[in-house]
Amino acid sequence: MNQNLDPWIPLEGDIPKKSDNEGYLRRRMNLKSNLNAFFALSFPERMPTILLEVPLSCAPEQIEMLDCRGFQFKMMPWDSSNGKLILLALHLADHQFRDVFAIIAEEIRLALDNVLDELIAVRRLTKILHHWREFFYRYSGSPLTKEEQQGLFGELWFLKNELLSRLDAHIAIAAWTGPDGAHQDFQTSSVAIEVKTTRMLPPEIVMITNILQLDDTSLPSLLLYHLSVDPRQDGEYGLMDMVKDLRLSLESDHPACAAEFNIRLLRTGYRDADGQKYSATRFKIRHSHIYRVGPNFPCLREHDLPLGVGNVCYSIATAACFDHKITIEEFEVLLTGNPHE
Image (cartoon, rainbow, N blue to C red; front, side):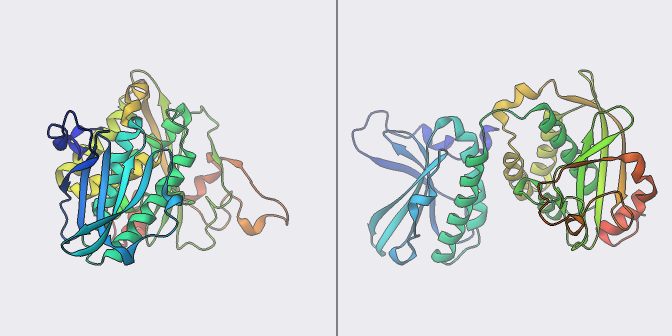
């Protein structure tokens, strides 16, 4: 991770080198609200920490459910001139996850930015921690497989080349719902899009791994975006390049969107610490097509399944989808409601 995104670096030069006492060196979060929230380093452990001072009445329940291998949660009495308070402390549990913890910290900062009520602040904090507990439960610690790298490349390609050029950045980044476990990779108020990236020679096949991926029953519109790539060491586009380009563009023009992008990117399992392992992942783009899922589209829907049948995976030959192909102008109308000029 870019060290500029690590909020504890400014504190490291000020922490006591030797101390038998326990405590925190802290700096206030830059919030629009007046919450007493801080980035801190604990000493003597020098462990990155997030602190939040709240009234005792706002204490969260079942705090033992907020621990995981990535972080530890503590609640301590905290007397001050403002009356009896408690201190909520979120500690990094393992230094190998410091890059992850920095992104969690930024998500917490964004969630607390405009909150005036301490109880709402605690609820938002615990919701975020429950979400990241699930991440650490699923996360193997291993780099993305070649198939996962390819799939992520396709989603980032679509985000950069098809969404950010047509939608406000806040809407485009929020539309990337795949990292949160949604059935489709992208969703807006008007359309859902499933992105499939293949590297097979003809006949081209896309794999559908969830019966709901191409089930348009309850959706206003559903599209299948197919990107065909050729993995090559001399390929023009790389996964790391795509991440870097998106970050630079967002950090320059939309800093809040850049933070949200990093949060979603991490939830895919992509970590900068594994970056060099992805350096050989490069692609030449062969072609891309957009298909509209509707009547007679070659797919299965949940209501098609006989009683007792589940966990269905199947494949589709893209040649069978050509009658459902739409133009980029038609795609833009579905996406924005406005024709392409």
